[in-house]
Length: 363
Image (cartoon, rainbow, N blue to C red; front, side):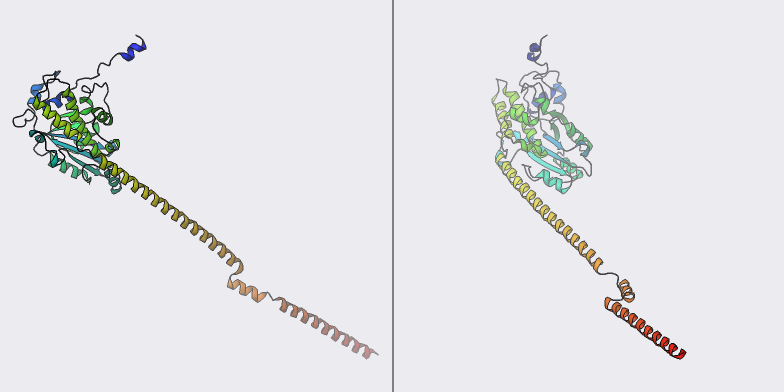
């Protein structure tokens, strides 16, 4: 087999129908008489209740996203983010959904770690106020949000997200888990599991890539992607009933409306200004510190030099007194020298007189 044949041959798992997509169809009653593969529909029907007069499941669809090093998650002194976005299917009972009452997607952002970490990771959250909390607060808040409700957990390649839920001891009445990476393969005809950024682009969801750095935003867009996967998948069917069309229109509207692109761009500009001002302030403080250190070094050198000069000029007072006591001045030395000469001259004259007297006695 030549290289051209190898490269043009379609991959066996391209557009693969995975269980996650069938579960997604089951959640919104969008099977539309399509193939379910080996999926046990009777088993799924026994799990959870339907909404009144509907085949849509009565549950909370919860997208969870964690950001941080895996070994940091759930540690008391760890640094990580937890994002949560929730769609209550009870909002779908009335068509069309009233979007004027606020976003149907309730989104939360929690930060665990020092104050500096919180400020660094919270500024770009688009759907409310970030919360600086401990792991116990996250557990308590999630338990309150999901109380007495069935849950479908949504992740995007979420191994760490599963580990967090387990390690944090968060108890959910979880019916099943849907990984959007797997669910998207068939509707988008993919032969790989794509990143959430590329998936949103394929699905036509408005977003800014920088939004995804925040765990809260990321969870929100993962849930939006799930709703768009459901609509793209169902729209491939040419025989849609009016009720199904209304549901798909609602899901698409929830997924694409309320993305605060302009507000986020203003946030980014404001953050860039803050970072610029902060960097400039740090540079100014650094320059001032360098100048002060330079002046301090110069002053120290000057003091050392002055001290050395003083030591050379000013000796120990006791030593100086001793030297002054035993060392005559030049004037004193001259006087002493003159006295010695005078004494010698006097002695000489005296000796001369004595010799003269002796001579006279002899004569």
